[in-house]
Image 1: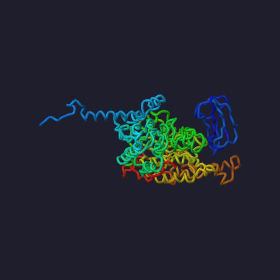
Image 2 (image 1 turned 180 degrees about the vertical axis):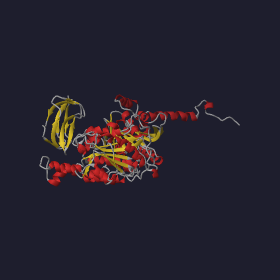
Image 3 (image 1 turned 60 degrees about the vertical axis):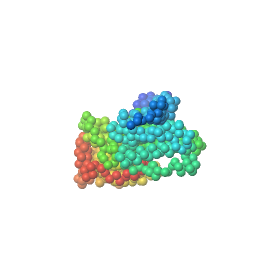
Image 4 (image 1 turned 120 degrees about the vertical axis):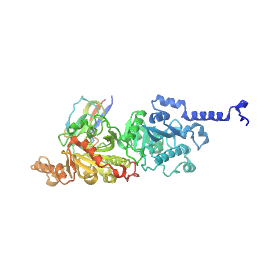
Amino acid sequence: MAEIEAKTEVTGSVWKIVTELGQRVEAGETIMIIESMKMEIPVMSEEGGVIQRFLVEETTPVSEGQVVAILTT
Amino acid sequence: MSKPRTVAALGQPHPATEKADRYEVMRAKALAMGGPEKLARRKAAGVLNARERVDVLVDAGTFIESGLFGTSATRPEDRERSPTDGKIVGFGKIDGRECAVVVNDFTVMGASSSATNGRKIGHMKRVATARGLPMVFLGESSGARMPDHMGSRGMGALLGNDGTQYMRMRETPWVSATLGYSYGSSSWYSVLSDFNVMRKGAVLAVSSAQLASLAIKEAVDPEVMGGWKVHAEVTGFADQVVDTDEDAIAAIKTFLSYMPAHHNETPPERAVAPDSGKAMAGIAKLLPQKRTQVYDVRNIIRAIVDAGSFFELKARFGKVAVTGLARLAGRTVGFIANNPLFKGGAMDTDACEKITSFLVLCDSFNIPIVMLVDTPGFSIGTEAERKRAPGKIMNYMQALQLCTVPKISVILRKSYGQAYLNMGGGRNSDEVAVWPTAEVSFMDPTFAVKIVHGLEPGDPGFSEAFNSMNKDNEPWDMAAIYAAQNVIRPEDTRDYLIRMLEVHRQRMTNGVGQHLMHAWPTSY
């Protein structure tokens, strides 16, 4: 079982977490949405996996490249 | 007249027969590559050998090899073990069109660069340039041959004797596949090419990880140093990434199908695929209702172009912008689009480099350009400045203005600030069309309200100020002063583009542009 890090590609704040712990997501599926530059930017899973941990909450400020969730394959 | 005396008559082999036999022996030796053991190891690894790659690349029966009997010339002891001197070159037809081909044979001395194989490559490039043939490089090489290049005599004899060896003037398309460890000249040709496809597991680098480890005294992982992820996501040197040799060669053929054979002709036309344009009725629904929501612009491109014709380049690099070749009514067109799915479409320095190189490609080979615009502007801030954003933005701007192929810009949604110009606004394209959903201004209205009125969202008066700023962003004022030549319904976009590209065909020069960037760098 390999760990996958889901990272935000933009600086902003967490607007909405649209998945739940233990949920399976496929590659390209949205895990949460970051508000940045007045836009809703999705954090998408690079690979299919199951969400193990969220490292942020809604409204948490985040920086570009920050890991926001951990998945396992 | 007496009968000619023959050796055969004396019971000896005829000299001509002996020479013919010798030819067959020499030929068999040259075709044997690096020997059965090395070839078996490649087969077991699922990797094609050099001659199999040639066979997959060119149309059956069309390959005429050049320099089959070339061998190492620097050290006599290498002569017997260097069939074709490690590089198979020749002419072959790809989908019916003549091409010059260089295929590295890693089983022969690691396909290392030498005097003889350097002359073979030089001949291919000279003929390709003089006769208007695309060049194909299938790369896999250990770099310069050792010890041939050692010492001042080695350097003087083997390097620098062709002053045009790495000169790229874009007279004909160059395409490359990185199919294994590619160091030295093999990597140079990959980055000099108009299209480079990389097979997973291949490595593209200046020199081997082993040499790098020796030089910097630390362990270097080849994959980390120059693997496909590095070049697909960080450097942008890989235009596409594939799993197998066969897929790489298929990608080369597809790329070439969009290209002219040389810069003095237009790209070949194809029959329009059935079902082209069928998705146009639903195109407006691909755009989200809310201006803050994102979407993948590639779905819009696929709806507009001939069915199945979108061929994306550098998909994993500078993802905030999309570049790719496609066909409209059977003719090649280059698409540049902002992709709000990534960073809301705000353009960064990687996207600037990606678009600049794509503009140079299209303009050099007479490919009209369509721009689809939806960007809040260029990424700003400390990081952008450290990455030399002003320089990148102006390189891109200059490339756009030097293009002499037709350019059509369609504003789908946002077009703000300098990015308005870089995406073809005003006279930076031949025609500007806008969708009714377009919003054009110097900056996002939310920020403008803060700067002009000092109001934040939620403050009294913010909504009124925002609505006023936002109303002024609508496309009608722009159309009224003819800064946009057309306001079009989204579902009419394909027909509009086909018709407008027809209007702007370069009739005076038979579709051939001026190629003002033919000597521009191949990376930035």
